[in-house]
Structure formats: structure tokens, C-alpha cells
Image 1 (tube, rainbow, N blue to C red):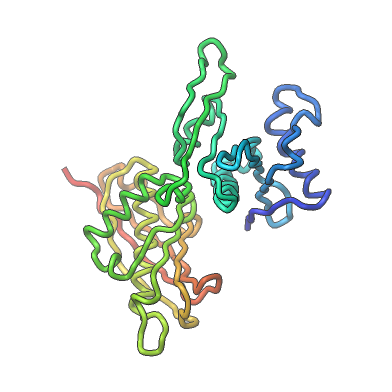
Image 2 (cartoon, one colour):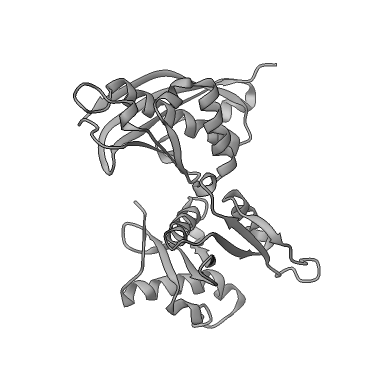
Length: 300
């Protein structure tokens, strides 16, 4: 289990800076200490740690002006790359910037990482001459809006939300909105006031629908990630209700909980996958939806 923390103790900062040095400075034979600068004293630091408390990814935010925040020193341990920890750091730092009323964030990036930041909704505003200097950095910018609060693939999520409104009208009636997507996690939220029963809690059928749509949405986005075509349908679904939903409901699905694979689609065959979604009453788990999904291969 991984979590994002704000390093605060001397031991935590020692681990934080060492990972920054190991990823960003050691490969270039730079000495310990070169990974720090004068903004570290006033910056906002975030670190992903594993169950043992060891650092997995780090990043820093500082302000160039009240309106402009800058993300620097993004680093993920090589053995943990590709697991979504960089997105978790971006999410945490952007949330901190929004909380401080920043209007936009800038990031400097080399060619090797620019694709990642574009997937996180950043746009190139100053292109570097990497022909003359392969190590030159491009400058990217994200101006904050309601749409791009979604950290990863915000344009895909906007398209998915529009698809739901057009083709699955119940989603709009229930007030279901995509809240966050990180590439590894997909979260939706609904309005309790639109799904309330005579007991003042959420309809069981609404909870089931929220779980189904959350799993469906994650699978749809994963098809796009893999550049595969197919139609996601629910073959069978079960839900266990533990406690009533009394506050604003949300549902979360994780890619790590998906069993099966998409490879059959490459051969023109249907893919079968099992996955689940946790339905939360704010931070409290209250129900678990498990679904057997079929991705229908596109037929010529």
C-alpha cells in the first residue's frame, strides 16, 4: 500500500533528498547536496512512501508569484516506475497549488519526460532547441480550470463524461460525475439528494449503478490507453451492502483489482475481465461492487 505524505521529520527529509539525488543527480556524477536549492526552505514537498515507509517518488512545489506555482524535482525510483506514483505526486502538488489560490502551474521538462506531462494536461508554452542542446528543457503550463482538475488524461475524461450524459441518461439524473483519474485509479461521485430514499439514505439501486459505471469507466479509459477498440458491457454483477450511505457518495476502482486481460481483442475476440469498485460514504467503505465485464471486439 502506498500513500502520499508531507515529509516533516529529519529522517523523512533525509530519505526525500536522497531519492531526489539518486534519480536526478547521481546519473550525472553530481555530488550529494547538488539536489537541493534555495527554494527548498519555502517550498511544499510531497513524497510517496510504501508500507515500510521507504520513498518511492518525490516532488516539490514553490511559488514564483501569488498566481504562478512551479513544480520541480520530480523523481520516481527506477524500480517503481510505471505504477502511477508520478501522477500521485502531481495530484498532491497541484492540489496544494489550488489551495493557495494559484491560477496556473509551470514545469520545465526534457524530451524524455514531456510526454508524461502532456498526459497530465500540460501544454508546451516555450519549446527548447534540443537539436543544439539535447539536455535543454521545454516549459509547460497548466492553467487551472474545473475541467483539468482531473490529473491524468483530462480530455479523455471530459469526453467520457459527455458520452455518459448522451448515452446513459441515468448518470446525469443521478448526478454522477468523474472526480479523478490517475491512470491506475478512477473515482466517481454522485449527489445524495438525487438518489435518496424514504430513510434519508441512498437507494440500493443507485449504489449498484454507481459501482457499475465506475468499473465501466475505468475499463473504457484503459482501452484508450492500450489503443484498443471494443464495447464494454456488464455480463454479471454482485454487490454487498455493509452500511447505508448517508453523506455524499463516491466510488473508487483500481486497475490492480482487474483480473483477466485485453489481449484477446488484438485477435478480434471478446475480452473477459473481472473487477470491483468500493463505494464510500465520504471516507468510510459501505459497499463493494464486483462485476464480470465483456469487452466486445470490433467486427469488420
